[in-house]
Image 1: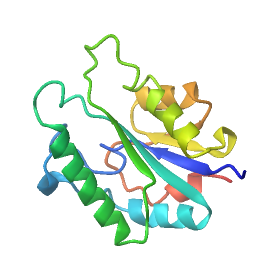
Image 2: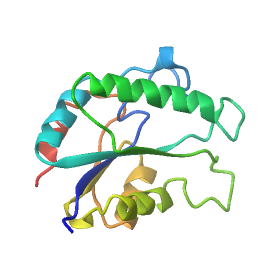
Image 3: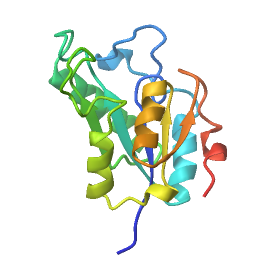
Image 4: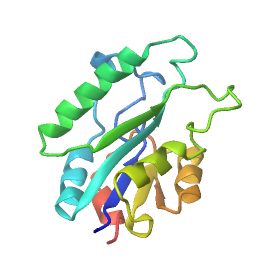
Length: 164
């Protein structure tokens, strides 16, 4: 069976702009970073699949609910679909960093490992893109190549950084 090559993406700061609010949980506050959809469209053309891995600790802090996160993810999927881009899956960790027994919050890599198994992903041909050290740690822990970007920047260049 042929293995897939994938790009794992952090959400807040990489996919969407979080300059105005650290916790993005309302659809009206959710905006794609410039250039992201175009870069993903090019990477899709090159055969990559996309999986989002995001920490959503505001759930365990009772700042918002899982339903709020799901609504934002519906909007994300709709926005990307308008560019012909499809996300295979969005995995999110609802725990806060204060919770010691959590295995899914980055820099831990349980959600990445679940996706690798579920989607038959070739680690050597796959990448994780994040804007924080915890993202990069999680990617490296799973044997992925990693790219650290600046939060909220234009992501058009992303397709140029990912080398097949």
